[in-house]
Image (tube, protein in one colour):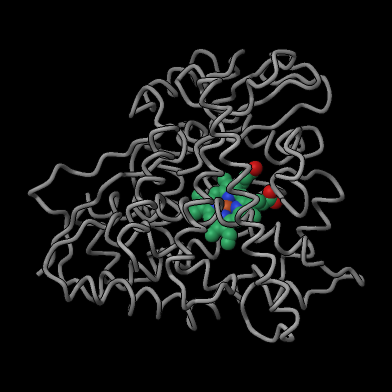
Length: 426
Ligand code: HEM
């Protein structure tokens, strides 16, 4: 793999982190105060904290921000009253095709039903055995373990394995790692689309559009070729080509746009969640030892990390009718910003909500969303992180935080996670 492509990717990752960092690194005391004093806040709270987001884009649509678990749950589970179609508005070709996040109603339901079979836990288990674990072991963790006695988990593997894995699962040719990273760079350009500064927003928006087009142009021939070759493989593109539900088939344009939409959704989110889960686990020796001894606990660690430090920290919906939440009137067309990071620590639902406790009784939280738009790839993400952790525990004996570096710090009011996790082993 070429150095410059790695450097470009790191730069793009940093760009995304900087763009969404916001004005405070630890927002939790602030969210607690909001849950107590103003759980349904009139205003775009996340924008006030310096996080660019789509809610404030039209002056005619006031924004309301929700902090309580029950209110966030109400919005996320009622996709009829709280819609997502605005995400696709005005983006034209950028959002033309099968892009779930911006779809509503029957169209969304049909698309989810069509895609569901390729994302079931059993399909993902098969992928995990055949692909995910071997890639993590052989291409990332074993070489890293053999290279010395210390590593930085984000730069040395976390930034790259989700891209490597998801692109293999999608079925992109595996003999061109630089091209895969170029795709990843474009995917990050799409993520940096929303910006605070209007001038910057214009440039970033154009860059995002160009990146989306470049990705489409590069992917369409891959899909077409796969169809020509009979689409017999277990990769996502082949599976999508073979899908049929009530006689509906996906055409090459739909497959290309769906697969393209996965790239910003699947890679960087997994990187940051992996970083958070490792950082939280390594910070508590007792938890770490228990998990190393009983690997079935890894999935609990991931769920708890996604509750306590969700990477996707807030979700926006639009009210389809006049409605009231917590005594606050929300007019039709208003934007409703659900602060997942706050709801996930609501003391009315979680005991010792600020504590990382993988052994707590799990209750619904919103780090992978909730309701009809809940993350379709969550089993993929969990399988990757599980395989990564297993490989680290197997090949890096007594892995622990490196005392030569400061403990990992979570940053990012959106797309949150630690920028560095330094470890050593025996
Ligand atoms: C740890 C990593 C991940 C996190 C934290 C995450 C988070 C989320 C969240 C919060 C949503 C809900 C969006 C909404 O309510 O509007 C979502 C949706 C989605 N995610 Fe993930 N995701 C992750 C990994 C993945 C992966 C690996 C894939 C693909 C293989 C994926 C594909 C999608 C898609 C297609 C949607 C849209 C679903 C819909 O609107 O119906 N995600 N994700």
